[in-house]
Image (cartoon, rainbow, N blue to C red; front, side, top):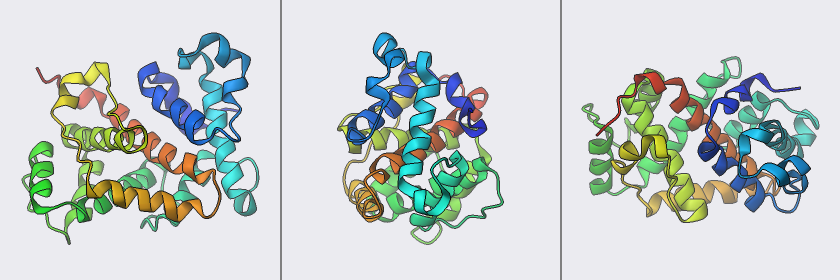
Length: 238
């Protein structure tokens, strides 16, 4: 049965889905089943042809990670909640998935922000076109506000995060052809932010190797949903 909170992935491009597939194949190579699936073998890299298999892999990795807590067949929301707890995200379990994801993205953004130099903070503020004064105490609140507001700032910050994830994990930026011009406006900071997020991977990985897969997947899915929710708000930057 398809998880309702992952249905939007069927509206993504193959290019956007490629990151999910690479994470599953690269970080989940010991237990993943996607690479031996006949539909995958016959159609890749047309990821939309086996989007149901990708969704199942996401839930399977979550089940492998959290089986002692929530059973072998978790929903995406259950996976999201436990990832948030591991990362000490401030959230309400009764909220919907999108709201919980916003809190997760704000927490990741805050950790990135706190490890930036003053010059890099200024550069990020300029890139996101933020007029509100931000400092190490106000950063998280401002980031959460940005995600809740949507629009171009939310879009840029979401794109920034998924580009950074790709830089950190695969040593290359995530190129989204439909938004290539906008993507070029976002500088990828590869210094202290990497140490922070790498520390997150290290901390959660002690609970099981599947966390190496599920944590970046959940962060990426959260940012990708935010981007797709506000596609109509984005004006093409020439």
